[in-house]
Image (cartoon, rainbow, N blue to C red; front, side):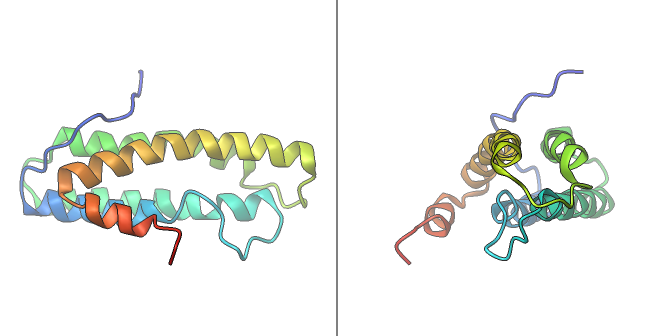
Length: 142
């Protein structure tokens, strides 16, 4: 099965719009490590594990809230899980402090996921009507 990044999304009802909003919020801060990073790969991918758990909660809650879930929205959630999973699998048990070569490899893996995540964030923001919020959230002059 080929998984491609979503290019559009049309919320079909309020439940889907709310689920999309929650997904946008969860995804917005979980792509890169925080300043509290302990120097290990396992700590870097911890937010991705939390994102996958949040995706599961969002999908489960959304499916319970509607009679006929939108396959388009479910694909967006599953795409994120699919693209985060290899990074998690590769690095989740790596508790050894990183040296330059492994940092470069980890960075490349994270950058690949971040590229996909940015596409999803953009699709959610445009379709959900949150582009102004997205721009404000990414401001660096605050």
